[in-house]
Length: 75
Image (cartoon, rainbow, N blue to C red; front, side, top):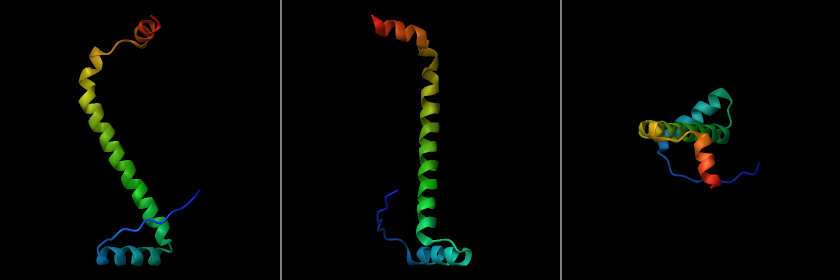
């Protein structure tokens, strides 16, 4: 897997807390930050999916059965 550098500015106290946390637990700083970003992205994507599900669930009764949809597409 290829890697890249991601430079961001964060609050000094936050950066120090993360560094201290990683050092105490023997975790590599970059690994910790990468995993934290991945987890946050997954959580945000899940929230979006749940909002879509809630928004679109009312339209489910309007949906055609797949068989009918496929038959209409063949015409």
